[in-house]
Length: 82
Image (tube, rainbow, N blue to C red; front, side, top):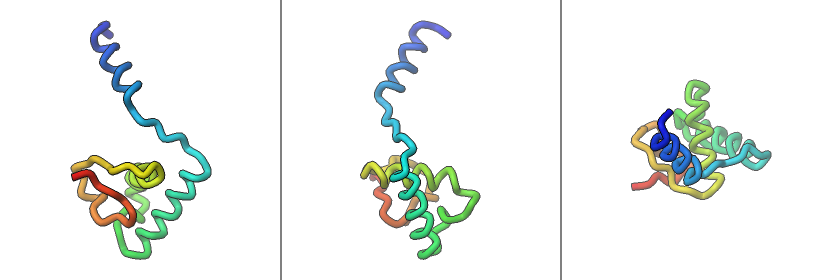
């Protein structure tokens, strides 16, 4: 790996928000899954488990989720960036 590429990767990692998996995050995942199931949102489906974790992480840290994936639209309590 070239030096310039390594610096870009290290900068991106340093600027990233890392959300540690804690009991509170696991609770947020369970609560979001239940809320999605209640309103019939597809994030409650097992096939979207990874997306559910992404959404719950954003909800957990009160951050808007930047995405072009329509699966997140209408998820309860999830703020999508415009």
